[in-house]
Image 1 (tube, one colour):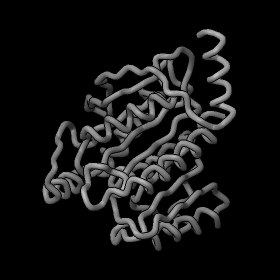
Image 2 (cartoon, rainbow, N blue to C red):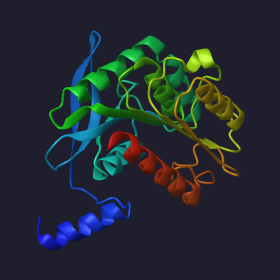
Image 3 (cartoon, helix red, strand yellow):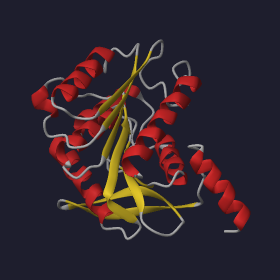
Image 4 (cartoon, rainbow, N blue to C red):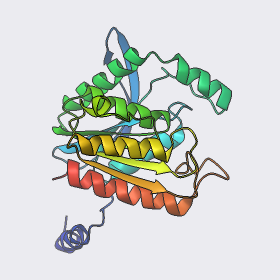
Length: 250
């Protein structure tokens, strides 16, 4: 890296702007209980140890948008493992997506989350003390479940997912949590999210909650015509990167 690039990179870091990194991607396999599962891994090409993220898909399965999210996160410096809770199944049909979501045994999903954490922890490119989780919709719910079941998780991002609302339900969480909830969401409501925030605060845990009024569930996915909201999606990503930088990079 020449002197000019070093100066520019330092200035961007000072201004709080990310320097896009070159990345590499691959499909990886690793044990999860008695199963062998696969995931989509995106990681910076730069040397050294990086923070890492377990990236959790929506109820559609591990589709291209989640893979793109993993690549974007990798360009920001995070080793990103997009897990596959459906074991290779994907759909664009809401009824089929619901069936797939309901068919996932909770304990198997928890085992998969633990396996993903173990896989990332064992990578020479990863700082094992700086591993977080991030998910959308069903994946947001499982990001919450990851925080409940992975005591060494360093950060958790929940994008419009199911969360607990009592002190007892958040007690196992050891990491800071960021929530992005849609104001018009009738499934994962703002009321639920606010109750989660209150429970976290009551138990002395770090939580950051953001409501996006006037938008609906899944507003961050550009593949949802009539629902996607570009300005709020960009704001949500800005808040997520700020949160991840604070809790995974320092």
